[in-house]
Image (tube, rainbow, N blue to C red; front, side, top):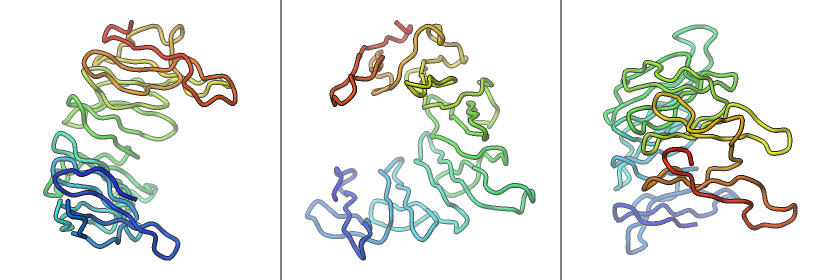
Length: 231
């Protein structure tokens, strides 16, 4: 397995003992980092999240492991100078199994809340955080909740718009719609929803799917572009 080059390095994987392990190669195909990780994510802000031995950390393009904590079990991508890391810890409260913090590129904890079970990357100055029981909300860079609505699913903001789901259909699954930075829906979520968001907003438009294709057919269903105004 090999992936596109970024900063003159690429993730490549080989099978070892019936398991894929990943390392980094240069543009000549030489190993910069021998295959040893169960996952290497793409580079963001000069760092890539890696997973190994039930924990995770961050490496530089030349392969140096620069951030690691044995308590981390999920490391997100850096974006806007912060990354979400989830750790198992019982020191803060005996009933807490795991919680999420946001760290900077030095590994310093910038934001932390024991209610956050998972955090998504910051985008447009906000990030979606999961507080359990299918409840997602959005925080700003101070850690304050700025969109209190509790969504079943929540995606990153792009061009001031984010895809969220707050109800599902028994036959169609999660139903999505878009909100703005104030949490206001761009259209009536009970009247117009999407089964998939193929591409978030870019150059003023998002690409969505309205209906699944007929059963047994692999092509797309009903597709359309949505503008920043929701139409």
